[in-house]
Length: 374
Image (cartoon, rainbow, N blue to C red; front, side):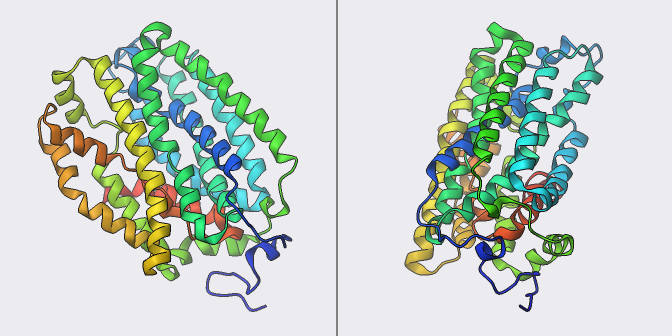
């Protein structure tokens, strides 16, 4: 069969990987399993930013920022996702996923044993292997098992890993941090991730053939450059997610904003408040955007990514209020809530399943890397 501009054949994606059974319903258990894995990984990633600055001082004898806050480490996260997305389509998504979970769990525990700045710096970037493998693989496995009319809702249900993870890290920092200390928090999270790795291995025994790598190298490479040009949904999704990320800034809490609210509340109270807001409104934004996009698509034939970007544009005044008003102002709290409406269903509701890992990885890369330039 003649391939299209994206290197696809005219066959149904499931047939190209040997699957013939049509998808009938949303795989709720699988979505929740991936969601929990992502939440744990995001908590591990964000704990350094959530814990008080004095936590780094105990293992850092010189005045330098914590390793996770260095831009160079963030770039490592971004580029690793692209490489591992390609690898997932070649070797098999479940294999790459379980390997990534094992790596980030191990290095989370090792970070709790760090004795200095450089040992911490060596351990923390490898925690990103979890997200770099989970995002391209899970965001492709889920749509491949979901009926088309519910794809955005399924991805929206899966998407709250970012707000729930970041919010969870602030809640842990505010509640368990003073008791366990930063080392205890990292050592606690490591075994939790290892448990997820073992459960992932058990689930991998019954994976369908479509989750094995079945794409040639040239087709996988072509989709990285060609998909945004030929797929307008992907273009709208990329623009919307970069716009949303720009509204939040590079850190979960920008230093200027943190300084304003810590003058209004104690540090522990501020962390707990931000954690609750992130969990609540991040969950609402991710799940709600998926349901909204599916409804607009069915009722008005409106592109999913375009409908969500219209909603984001309408929220701009509240986002500006979050940046400009004092911390005690009610509009400041409302703007903070709006700024964490993660609408992650934008990214992968229309990704082609055969090259899903390859196509999803650049979008995750753009989410982490392109917004500072924008």
